[in-house]
Length: 450
Image 1 (cartoon, rainbow, N blue to C red):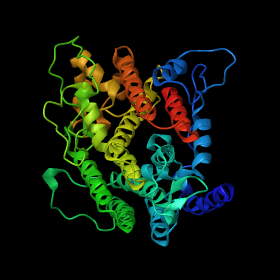
Image 2: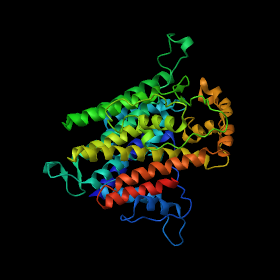
Image 3: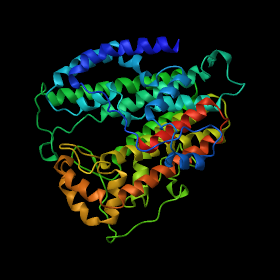
Image 4: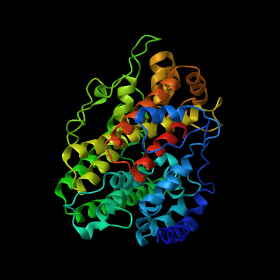
């Protein structure tokens, strides 16, 4: 049955791919795995698992990302990269896809967002899969109605719906990020051509994102759980607040805070307790931002907890809530999702700096961990970022890349990634030893060299 669903999903995907095929022809790049990796057993302890992942052992199997995700998808029943496929293939979204063809050649950023969604860019993070795995790893209590149980895969129907909701919210955020400012502040209010490509692209980005967000809200409401509704609403709030943290250019692309420390200064590595923005005690309240900006690790963590870690954490929290688990375990679910997201983000941000030279035309996030850590080490490098205050496209990324790969930022980012990976592993040790728990552990280990 799972295989048949996979075949049907892939066939259906061709419908939209044929419409949007002109947006790009290359699928996601193959994942390069550096060094030997050991496929863990479920009985290992968290610290030992990460140590084994770093060791090179002859004759053992490479820790392959594609294999880890593929086996995880089999455990939960079907490829979760297609969780929101039935919404993307609705008549409304099919019409949006047709209209997107009008933007080809216009260089509207919505095209990049559409390509990422269609080709399942690994940088978007398979959050639906993580939610279903943590749901199956925890199981459910006897209080859950039998009609909500899917005995074939051990996941509740409501948990599967929540995983779909999370994918939709994440997709809607990505689509909304394709909206651009059409005028500078000096020209604000002047009439624009109503049929221009940029105006049309903004309309599509707004309507497409709103459509997915409306369906997500409707599906959450259909679960008839007020506590879950409030929890996910607070995740919406966090995503909105992430757009207003720190400086940004005219298109609201984030810029790092200007460093105020002397050259050569290295702040201490934060403990997990120091990275508590109030969400560990109560993740329903707005997060504290005082004293965060300008401190590289705290600034990076706050940006990415608000920008996605909160959504994944609260979705894991909500999944355990639907299963009837006690509040303490629900909070552990939140911490797992939060640390998993941060570890994943750190892995993604390391990728542009694994090459000695940045490819022509490539760029990277100016608020990524390697950049923030290097700015603390050498504040003079901020001069390369200052031209981006009007547009980040004015930054000399190649020169910035050369500076960063010579500094301590990469090693600090690797340590950051390992810290959050270990924190997520420690949460998993609270769950029974199951195939779902082992699958999550394997994903974390494969993520070390994503």
